Image (cartoon, rainbow, N blue to C red; front, top):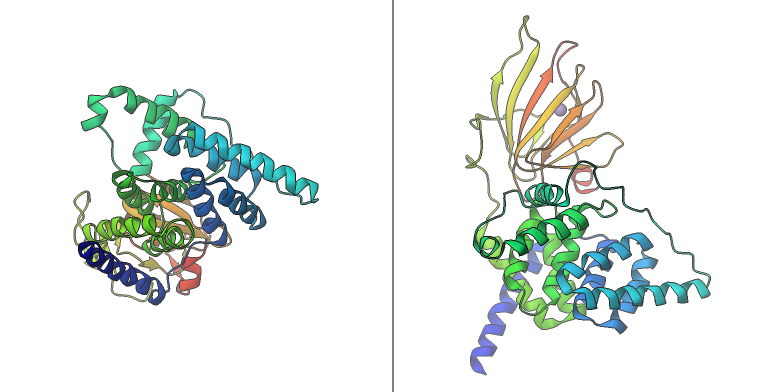
Length: 372
Ligand code: MN
């Protein structure tokens, strides 16, 4: 009993430390839609139908479409089993029927695009899994029971993650909320906290997710999930990059001018000259670091080689860049690029200087950096 009390105190301390961090950091929190997604996923995983009914109504009121919610409940079969998924879908049908009677008109939302032709589910799933997690998965249990490896790739990463009516960041929020609410899924929760961060969920957003579980779903599950999250953060400190193991080119010199915010490094690989007016540089951004707004009169190509970054053109949403992504930036379009909130980003920038050199503009404000 006494031991339990001490453990509880220690956990509360860890937990309140996390919460304090959430308050002092100015980084973004979950959107109201994402908070609804957390609750819908957690109650589906627990099989708590009365609470799910309330969460579904709240989610629809927040603007989640019918297609998005259906997709979440379908995805959850992979984590909570067909019975929980089917019960939740039946619950959604009843909720929609009731709202229709009250003349509430919920948006249908869009259907997913067709699967890419010329690829088997196993091929598509293997590619999606590698991109989502950042490394190739194999060995261990997947070698011991190859059938589970095949089904994970075909069903979960091929068939489910191949549907584009939810993005991968949202799919990770769904998975993490479900795993946090379930007993005995701590090893999976631990790895999905990491995968979630790799797909653009910030540490503070994860701490907020855990707070929602603790306050709304189950104090005990919230506490256990908080411990797992703290362990993940302690184990993988996203501190300044020196020389990431996987980097292909040297990190170069610290950039010392006003065209960047935060700490970034440049290794100039090719200088442009009269015979070839293309410049190639390897740029490493520490978490939170980014360029100012700028444009290239001759356009630019970016090759993402490590970490997790952002790219945004004026007037368009921010794009998440993972290792292996490429960007063709059109001539004269103002844009910025840089690291994500918690992880560094490494890119090769290929700049065409034929029509003139880069035109630098104002810094990217915290608001611009934090918004979608
Ligand atoms: Mn650029």
